[in-house]
Amino acid sequence: MPALPPFQVLIDEHAEVVMAVLRAAVGHEAADDCFQETFLAALRAYPKLNDAGNLRGWVITIAHRKAIDHHRARGRRPLPVAEVAEVGVEDPLPGGEIWTAVGVLPPKQRAAVTLRYASDLPHAEIADALGCSPAAARRSLHEGIKRLRKELA
Amino acid sequence: MTKTPMSGLVERASQEGLLDVAYTTTDSPFGPLLLARTPKGLVRVGLPNQDAEELLAELATRVSPRVLEAPGQFDEARRELDLYFEGRLESFDLALDWQLSEGFRRRVLRGIARIPYGQTRSYTQMARGAGNQRAVRAAGTACGSNPIPLVVACHRVLRSSGGMGGYGGGVPMKRALLELEGALDV
Image (cartoon, rainbow over all chains, first blue to last red; front, side):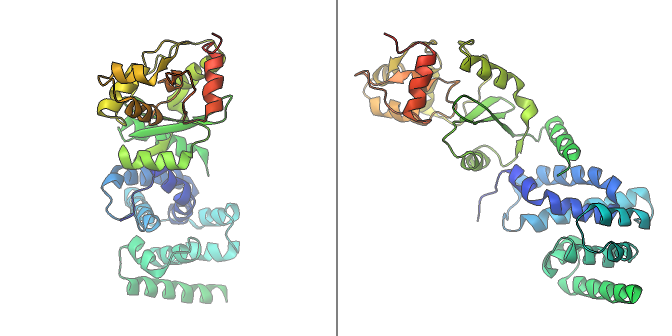
Protein backbone atom coordinates (compact mmCIF):
# COMPACT_ATOMS: atom_id res chain seq x y z
CA MET A 1 0.00 0.00 0.00
CA PRO A 2 1.52 3.34 -0.98
CA ALA A 3 1.95 5.79 1.90
CA LEU A 4 -0.37 8.81 1.99
CA PRO A 5 1.39 11.84 0.53
CA PRO A 6 1.32 15.16 2.42
CA PHE A 7 -2.19 16.61 2.10
CA GLN A 8 -0.74 19.67 0.39
CA VAL A 9 0.36 17.46 -2.50
CA LEU A 10 -3.22 16.31 -2.93
CA ILE A 11 -4.36 19.95 -2.99
CA ASP A 12 -1.66 21.00 -5.44
CA GLU A 13 -2.41 18.15 -7.80
CA HIS A 14 -6.19 18.15 -7.69
CA ALA A 15 -7.39 21.63 -6.71
CA GLU A 16 -7.84 22.60 -10.32
CA VAL A 17 -10.02 19.66 -11.30
CA VAL A 18 -12.04 20.00 -8.09
CA MET A 19 -12.65 23.66 -8.85
CA ALA A 20 -13.66 22.85 -12.43
CA VAL A 21 -16.07 20.17 -11.25
CA LEU A 22 -17.58 22.50 -8.65
CA ARG A 23 -17.92 25.45 -10.98
CA ALA A 24 -19.73 23.24 -13.44
CA ALA A 25 -21.92 21.78 -10.70
CA VAL A 26 -22.85 24.80 -8.55
CA GLY A 27 -21.72 27.83 -10.52
CA HIS A 28 -18.85 30.20 -10.11
CA GLU A 29 -19.92 31.96 -6.95
CA ALA A 30 -20.81 28.99 -4.78
CA ALA A 31 -17.78 27.04 -5.98
CA ASP A 32 -15.37 28.76 -3.57
CA ASP A 33 -17.44 27.70 -0.54
CA CYS A 34 -17.90 24.18 -1.81
CA PHE A 35 -14.18 24.03 -2.53
CA GLN A 36 -13.36 24.74 1.11
CA GLU A 37 -15.99 22.28 2.32
CA THR A 38 -14.60 19.64 -0.01
CA PHE A 39 -11.01 19.93 1.13
CA LEU A 40 -11.96 20.31 4.79
CA ALA A 41 -13.99 17.11 4.61
CA ALA A 42 -11.11 15.42 2.82
CA LEU A 43 -8.64 16.68 5.42
CA ARG A 44 -10.83 15.33 8.23
CA ALA A 45 -11.05 11.88 6.70
CA TYR A 46 -7.54 11.76 5.25
CA PRO A 47 -5.51 9.96 7.95
CA LYS A 48 -7.97 7.06 7.95
CA LEU A 49 -8.01 6.66 4.20
CA ASN A 50 -6.96 3.10 3.41
CA ASP A 51 -6.22 3.41 -0.24
CA ALA A 52 -3.85 6.07 -1.53
CA GLY A 53 -4.26 4.64 -5.02
CA ASN A 54 -6.98 6.93 -6.38
CA LEU A 55 -6.86 10.20 -4.49
CA ARG A 56 -8.20 12.13 -7.44
CA GLY A 57 -11.34 10.02 -7.69
CA TRP A 58 -11.74 10.17 -3.93
CA VAL A 59 -11.60 13.95 -3.68
CA ILE A 60 -13.84 14.43 -6.72
CA THR A 61 -16.39 12.14 -5.09
CA ILE A 62 -16.32 14.37 -2.03
CA ALA A 63 -16.69 17.46 -4.25
CA HIS A 64 -19.80 15.97 -5.77
CA ARG A 65 -21.30 15.25 -2.40
CA LYS A 66 -20.64 18.85 -1.39
CA ALA A 67 -22.27 20.08 -4.59
CA ILE A 68 -25.33 17.95 -3.86
CA ASP A 69 -25.42 19.28 -0.28
CA HIS A 70 -25.28 22.77 -1.68
CA HIS A 71 -28.23 22.19 -4.00
CA ARG A 72 -30.23 20.53 -1.25
CA ALA A 73 -29.56 23.44 1.06
CA ARG A 74 -30.76 25.87 -1.57
CA GLY A 75 -33.80 23.69 -2.12
CA ARG A 76 -33.95 24.12 -5.84
CA ARG A 77 -32.57 22.71 -9.02
CA PRO A 78 -29.13 23.99 -9.87
CA LEU A 79 -27.65 26.40 -12.28
CA PRO A 80 -29.21 29.33 -13.96
CA VAL A 81 -27.89 29.19 -17.50
CA ALA A 82 -26.16 32.54 -17.34
CA GLU A 83 -23.73 31.30 -14.71
CA VAL A 84 -22.64 28.38 -16.80
CA ALA A 85 -21.94 30.61 -19.77
CA GLU A 86 -19.74 32.68 -17.53
CA VAL A 87 -17.81 29.61 -16.41
CA GLY A 88 -17.27 28.72 -20.03
CA VAL A 89 -15.86 32.15 -20.74
CA GLU A 90 -13.54 32.33 -17.77
CA ASP A 91 -12.26 28.77 -17.73
CA PRO A 92 -10.20 27.53 -20.58
CA LEU A 93 -12.91 25.14 -21.69
CA PRO A 94 -13.50 24.69 -25.38
CA GLY A 95 -16.60 26.04 -27.11
CA GLY A 96 -18.62 28.36 -24.88
CA GLU A 97 -21.80 27.44 -26.72
CA ILE A 98 -21.42 23.76 -25.91
CA TRP A 99 -21.01 24.40 -22.19
CA THR A 100 -24.04 26.62 -22.17
CA ALA A 101 -25.99 23.70 -23.57
CA VAL A 102 -24.37 21.38 -21.01
CA GLY A 103 -25.65 23.70 -18.30
CA VAL A 104 -29.28 22.99 -19.13
CA LEU A 105 -28.95 19.19 -19.16
CA PRO A 106 -30.60 17.29 -16.30
CA PRO A 107 -28.22 17.13 -13.29
CA LYS A 108 -26.95 13.55 -13.72
CA GLN A 109 -26.30 13.96 -17.41
CA ARG A 110 -24.67 17.31 -16.88
CA ALA A 111 -22.41 15.93 -14.17
CA ALA A 112 -21.45 12.94 -16.29
CA VAL A 113 -20.62 15.09 -19.32
CA THR A 114 -18.66 17.60 -17.22
CA LEU A 115 -16.68 14.93 -15.43
CA ARG A 116 -15.89 13.17 -18.66
CA TYR A 117 -14.95 16.13 -20.83
CA ALA A 118 -14.00 18.97 -18.46
CA SER A 119 -12.25 16.80 -15.89
CA ASP A 120 -11.25 13.95 -18.17
CA LEU A 121 -12.32 11.21 -15.78
CA PRO A 122 -12.73 7.60 -16.91
CA HIS A 123 -16.16 5.96 -16.58
CA ALA A 124 -15.33 4.13 -13.38
CA GLU A 125 -14.38 7.37 -11.63
CA ILE A 126 -17.46 9.15 -12.95
CA ALA A 127 -19.51 6.33 -11.46
CA ASP A 128 -17.71 6.81 -8.11
CA ALA A 129 -18.32 10.52 -8.21
CA LEU A 130 -21.99 10.15 -9.03
CA GLY A 131 -22.53 7.25 -6.67
CA CYS A 132 -23.89 4.98 -9.37
CA SER A 133 -22.73 1.92 -11.31
CA PRO A 134 -20.30 2.35 -14.22
CA ALA A 135 -23.09 1.20 -16.55
CA ALA A 136 -25.42 3.89 -15.22
CA ALA A 137 -22.67 6.48 -15.56
CA ARG A 138 -22.09 5.41 -19.14
CA ARG A 139 -25.81 5.68 -19.80
CA SER A 140 -26.04 9.20 -18.32
CA LEU A 141 -23.07 10.25 -20.39
CA HIS A 142 -24.55 8.73 -23.52
CA GLU A 143 -27.97 10.34 -22.94
CA GLY A 144 -26.31 13.66 -22.24
CA ILE A 145 -24.27 13.59 -25.42
CA LYS A 146 -27.28 12.52 -27.46
CA ARG A 147 -29.25 15.44 -26.11
CA LEU A 148 -26.39 17.86 -26.75
CA ARG A 149 -26.16 16.70 -30.36
CA LYS A 150 -29.83 17.43 -30.79
CA GLU A 151 -29.57 20.83 -29.09
CA LEU A 152 -26.59 21.94 -31.10
CA ALA A 153 -27.58 20.47 -34.47
CA MET B 1 -5.40 28.60 -8.37
CA THR B 2 -7.56 31.16 -6.63
CA LYS B 3 -5.92 32.41 -3.46
CA THR B 4 -8.94 33.13 -1.31
CA PRO B 5 -10.51 29.68 -0.90
CA MET B 6 -7.05 28.28 -0.17
CA SER B 7 -6.08 30.63 2.66
CA GLY B 8 -9.59 30.27 4.08
CA LEU B 9 -9.06 26.53 4.03
CA VAL B 10 -5.87 26.75 6.09
CA GLU B 11 -7.55 29.04 8.58
CA ARG B 12 -10.51 26.73 9.07
CA ALA B 13 -8.29 23.67 9.26
CA SER B 14 -6.35 25.37 12.03
CA GLN B 15 -9.53 26.35 13.91
CA GLU B 16 -10.84 22.81 13.73
CA GLY B 17 -7.56 21.34 14.96
CA LEU B 18 -6.86 19.65 11.64
CA LEU B 19 -3.57 21.35 10.96
CA ASP B 20 -1.32 18.59 12.30
CA VAL B 21 1.75 19.75 10.40
CA ALA B 22 2.10 23.28 8.99
CA TYR B 23 5.04 24.20 6.82
CA THR B 24 6.56 27.01 4.87
CA THR B 25 9.81 27.91 3.19
CA THR B 26 11.87 30.92 4.14
CA ASP B 27 14.97 32.53 2.67
CA SER B 28 18.34 32.37 4.34
CA PRO B 29 21.84 33.46 3.29
CA PHE B 30 22.47 29.80 2.45
CA GLY B 31 19.33 29.23 0.40
CA PRO B 32 15.72 28.34 1.19
CA LEU B 33 14.92 26.65 4.50
CA LEU B 34 11.94 24.42 5.10
CA LEU B 35 10.17 25.04 8.42
CA ALA B 36 7.58 22.62 9.78
CA ARG B 37 5.63 22.77 13.02
CA THR B 38 2.98 20.89 14.92
CA PRO B 39 0.62 22.50 17.46
CA LYS B 40 3.40 21.76 20.01
CA GLY B 41 6.12 23.65 18.22
CA LEU B 42 8.82 23.56 15.59
CA VAL B 43 9.34 19.93 14.59
CA ARG B 44 11.58 20.07 11.51
CA VAL B 45 13.97 22.43 9.81
CA GLY B 46 15.14 21.47 6.33
CA LEU B 47 18.47 22.91 5.21
CA PRO B 48 18.96 24.29 1.68
CA ASN B 49 20.70 21.18 0.33
CA GLN B 50 18.00 18.84 1.66
CA ASP B 51 15.11 17.74 -0.53
CA ALA B 52 12.02 19.51 0.82
CA GLU B 53 9.62 17.15 -0.91
CA GLU B 54 11.29 14.18 0.70
CA LEU B 55 11.21 15.83 4.13
CA LEU B 56 7.49 16.56 3.79
CA ALA B 57 6.78 12.98 2.73
CA GLU B 58 8.67 11.82 5.81
CA LEU B 59 6.62 14.14 8.04
CA ALA B 60 3.44 12.76 6.47
CA THR B 61 4.53 9.24 7.41
CA ARG B 62 6.05 9.88 10.81
CA VAL B 63 3.85 12.66 12.23
CA SER B 64 0.58 12.92 10.28
CA PRO B 65 -0.45 13.07 6.62
CA ARG B 66 -2.38 16.26 7.43
CA VAL B 67 0.49 18.39 6.14
CA LEU B 68 -0.47 21.85 4.84
CA GLU B 69 1.45 24.84 3.61
CA ALA B 70 0.66 27.62 6.08
CA PRO B 71 3.14 30.52 5.93
CA GLY B 72 1.11 32.54 8.45
CA GLN B 73 2.08 30.14 11.22
CA PHE B 74 5.77 31.05 11.03
CA ASP B 75 6.00 34.79 11.57
CA GLU B 76 7.95 34.47 14.82
CA ALA B 77 10.26 31.69 13.62
CA ARG B 78 11.04 33.66 10.48
CA ARG B 79 11.71 36.81 12.46
CA GLU B 80 14.11 35.07 14.83
CA LEU B 81 15.95 33.27 12.04
CA ASP B 82 16.40 36.52 10.11
CA LEU B 83 17.87 38.18 13.20
CA TYR B 84 20.11 35.18 13.83
CA PHE B 85 21.55 35.31 10.33
CA GLU B 86 22.20 39.03 10.79
CA GLY B 87 24.17 38.21 13.93
CA ARG B 88 21.60 40.04 16.07
CA LEU B 89 20.06 37.11 17.92
CA GLU B 90 21.94 34.67 20.12
CA SER B 91 19.27 32.34 21.37
CA PHE B 92 15.99 31.28 19.90
CA ASP B 93 12.80 31.53 21.87
CA LEU B 94 10.65 29.04 19.96
CA ALA B 95 8.58 26.13 21.22
CA LEU B 96 10.04 22.84 19.98
CA ASP B 97 8.42 19.50 19.28
CA TRP B 98 10.99 16.74 19.91
CA GLN B 99 8.87 13.85 18.69
CA LEU B 100 11.16 12.98 15.77
CA SER B 101 14.01 11.91 18.06
CA GLU B 102 14.00 9.41 20.87
CA GLY B 103 16.11 7.98 23.68
CA PHE B 104 19.84 8.59 23.57
CA ARG B 105 19.56 10.73 20.45
CA ARG B 106 17.04 13.01 22.04
CA ARG B 107 19.22 13.38 25.13
CA VAL B 108 22.18 14.33 22.93
CA LEU B 109 20.06 16.85 21.04
CA ARG B 110 18.70 18.40 24.21
CA GLY B 111 22.31 18.76 25.37
CA ILE B 112 23.18 20.46 22.10
CA ALA B 113 20.29 22.87 22.56
CA ARG B 114 22.03 24.08 25.73
CA ILE B 115 25.41 24.91 24.11
CA PRO B 116 25.68 28.70 24.32
CA TYR B 117 25.97 30.85 21.23
CA GLY B 118 29.52 31.21 19.93
CA GLN B 119 30.83 28.16 21.82
CA THR B 120 31.62 24.66 20.65
CA ARG B 121 31.66 21.19 22.19
CA SER B 122 33.09 17.86 21.08
CA TYR B 123 31.14 14.75 20.17
CA THR B 124 32.77 13.09 23.19
CA GLN B 125 31.42 15.80 25.51
CA MET B 126 27.96 15.39 24.05
CA ALA B 127 28.09 11.62 24.53
CA ARG B 128 29.14 12.06 28.14
CA GLY B 129 26.41 14.63 28.73
CA ALA B 130 23.82 12.19 27.40
CA GLY B 131 25.00 9.54 29.85
CA ASN B 132 27.28 7.36 27.78
CA GLN B 133 30.82 8.61 27.38
CA ARG B 134 31.82 5.80 25.06
CA ALA B 135 29.00 6.34 22.62
CA VAL B 136 30.90 8.99 20.68
CA ARG B 137 29.92 7.59 17.33
CA ALA B 138 26.25 7.41 18.36
CA ALA B 139 26.48 11.02 19.51
CA GLY B 140 27.77 11.89 16.05
CA THR B 141 24.84 10.04 14.50
CA ALA B 142 22.46 11.92 16.80
CA CYS B 143 23.89 15.22 15.57
CA GLY B 144 23.56 14.04 11.99
CA SER B 145 19.92 13.09 12.56
CA ASN B 146 19.03 16.41 14.21
CA PRO B 147 15.53 17.22 12.90
CA ILE B 148 15.72 20.87 14.02
CA PRO B 149 19.15 22.15 12.87
CA LEU B 150 20.08 25.84 13.35
CA VAL B 151 17.62 26.21 16.24
CA VAL B 152 19.11 23.13 17.92
CA ALA B 153 22.62 24.20 17.00
CA CYS B 154 24.35 20.95 16.07
CA HIS B 155 26.82 23.04 14.07
CA ARG B 156 28.43 23.82 17.43
CA VAL B 157 29.64 20.24 17.85
CA LEU B 158 33.10 19.45 16.51
CA ARG B 159 35.59 16.60 16.63
CA SER B 160 37.73 16.35 19.75
CA SER B 161 40.73 16.91 17.48
CA GLY B 162 39.24 20.26 16.48
CA GLY B 163 38.19 18.94 13.05
CA MET B 164 34.89 20.20 11.68
CA GLY B 165 33.10 16.85 11.56
CA GLY B 166 30.04 16.64 9.33
CA TYR B 167 26.96 18.76 8.80
CA GLY B 168 23.60 18.03 7.22
CA GLY B 169 23.77 21.34 5.36
CA GLY B 170 27.34 20.71 4.20
CA VAL B 171 30.60 21.54 6.00
CA PRO B 172 30.96 25.00 4.34
CA MET B 173 27.65 26.02 5.91
CA LYS B 174 28.77 24.71 9.30
CA ARG B 175 31.98 26.73 9.04
CA ALA B 176 30.06 29.85 7.97
CA LEU B 177 27.67 29.54 10.92
CA LEU B 178 30.54 29.20 13.37
CA GLU B 179 32.23 32.22 11.78
CA LEU B 180 29.00 34.19 12.09
CA GLU B 181 28.92 33.33 15.79
CA GLY B 182 32.59 34.23 16.19
CA ALA B 183 33.37 30.70 17.36
CA LEU B 184 36.29 30.03 15.00
CA ASP B 185 38.55 32.95 15.81
CA VAL B 186 40.49 31.32 18.64
